[in-house]
Image (cartoon, rainbow over all chains, first blue to last red; front, side):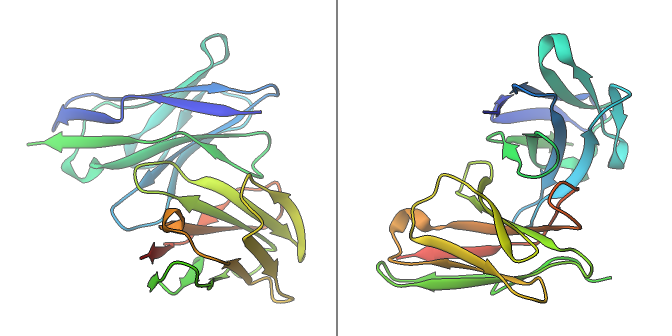
Length: 112
Length: 112
């Protein structure tokens, strides 16, 4: 079975500050890992994904994440937050793209 | 190119009623998955269909059923609605069962 834990249901940052959203996973097989963003009343948009290879993954809108097998983590970062980054972020794990197991989400709040 | 389209966008049903939600995948995609997202939670996997056959089922009661049609569109049916079925229902399509999934905007179901 696979599971995802996202630390912090809400994270608040100031515009221009570093964004760090934490994700830890559990998987009995090599994981595929994903970060999705969801704006109010919208579906999910893929930010980035890790499958195999390079452990530092770059995504859209300046986000990146690093797969750390020893720590079973896949934290999402962005050097400088914009107001438009305010949304809910979901980390997900799968055994090979097929079905996704999501975390409970982290709401990112960005203040001016 | 049209993305994943879901209909209706919103609906309200009464406890005990039945509901059908519809999903049209991206052209060329043969796999459709359904997820339930209760307010404040991450999406939970319900079903996956590929080439009109069920490829996976999540931990949901038999009141939930789905099917995929020859044109790869899909319907999710929920019988005997409960208040707890109120959620955003997300459809995701992918070219195959183990390839990246693209999500629709969802159907917001409210059971009263």
